[in-house]
Length: 597
Image 1 (cartoon, helix red, strand yellow):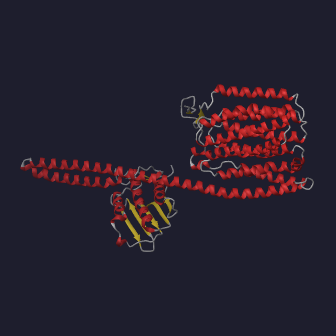
Image 2 (image 1 turned 120 degrees about the vertical axis):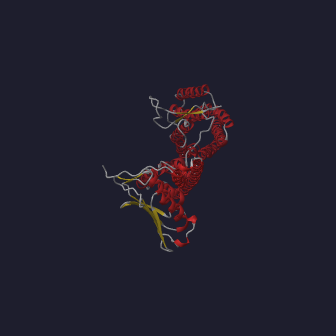
């Protein structure tokens, strides 16, 4: 069983990773390292033999025989390795290797048919060889399409296919302006025409392999890199064969045979270096990271179209087939670009929908988490309240029992003091009951009050744009934890009411120091209501409770059709603390005014 290990590069000091963790593939592949090295040595040896034999090859028949023999020397073992790779792979990779194996078999059949025609002089095998060679294009292309589809994540495969088609048009049109007539009138048309068609189609495989290479994680791109090299070598090989055929087989045979062996040898190595565990593609990434990062095709169009236009103007009238090829290429590019734009819009919509789903799931999870935290705090606060009140009740009972056992002359004096103690204990119990609600609020630092309000508002409205939240907070005020908690809870209840009942488009939260009091005002432009008809569930009682904890008061102004204003004046009671010296009493509203020093 193969393994993939995450290796994290760290600083020499032993601290955190200096860069993000890099994935390093320790996958030994389907075949052992010995087999891989042997295959490389085999291909290299065949290349050297081809160079040596090519020195004595001259003319059409000897060249074609040598070309077929050296190609079959690499294709024969490649078919065996590909069959093993297909059998040991799974899912889309198995189907891709199966189609690739059929394409290799078709390429080997082309060599056999041409070899038979040259050795025995049959003409029908020549024509059959060209037809079979063209059949290799869709077979190998289908295998690449399967791999692209499996690595594309949420991206549309049709956009990639249109990019491939546009690349073929852009790269082949300038060449075909000069070669169409020469190819069709050549005495070796049976050979050069299929080679030219293959040479036109092969750049598409290079482009597709490059796209596939970019979508895989580092450490898992070896086979895809070999695909790029194979497509490039095959393109060079095809056009060299076209040049050889058009020249009447007068070009030196050694370099052409070496390129042929290199081309077929890469097919062999491609199977030998196959992954035993197919790597993940874009589906390993989040939806926002699956977007197309590089605009390669638009750049090619911007470069290729002007060059094609210049070529048509300069050589269009002097070269037959020039104008039809240029005009046909322009028409194809316009159609393909239009279709690509429509599909890109669809793909973008799909990605945005995926992001919206993720955002909605996140919102629901955050909402559930906030409710769970609130419930836990409420439960803990209730338990603390119950224990504290119980302890105070026991203490009051003990004090009362002790007073009953005192002598009569002392009991009267002690009774008055104990009455004061019991009253104070009752007041403390009431304070604990009210602070039980305050403990539910999250801890807020000096910078997080506005953030907490924004987060709560977004959690309420979700993906809706209404009501919009406007904040007008005096940033020169520094509030202690208790005051921030009171302000947050009042504003929270008011925002909840606006969202549930007001139907407003804008809600404004303002917080300022006015005179000797802190004023919190929440206003909206909603439908308003009749304050006389308010019910307890509206949260008004909770807001009044927290205003009382802040030694302040709460006033609500509203009327049907005129919006609502909730105004809380904190620190306005008789015990309110001023923002200047002397220092405030512990436990009461504390405001610190920042003067910039």
